[in-house]
Length: 170
Image (cartoon, rainbow, N blue to C red):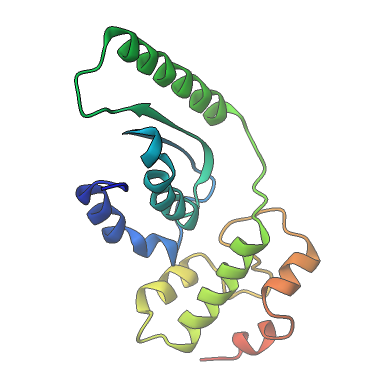
């Protein structure tokens, strides 16, 4: 009630590990939901949180009215038009090439989970394997993928001075 469905919540819980080791950087997402105006923000919040944490670039979101009584032809046509426009917007975003420019929070999360996986390899074994596959423990690694990250953003995100000791942890 006033959020995602039980099935969607189960799905989000099942794939939440992707927020520790995002594999969708460089991928785009557009959220579409059937809900009422009063549910819109509470329905999109968990979806946006997961998509952002998993690395997706959000290109938009749209909801169509889902009321507890039969919808009129006018409302159905309006919903169909809204979906067509959302699809066109998503398609134009999919076909547009953009350089990856992660925000400060994303860069910081990269450094935090990379450090935690190195410090607790038995607890975060899957994360450690992921970071090794991404070559995240190389000195030049600033993020999961090659991306435009300023020197200052990188230094502040890796807690200024905590970076070098990590390379020596075995």
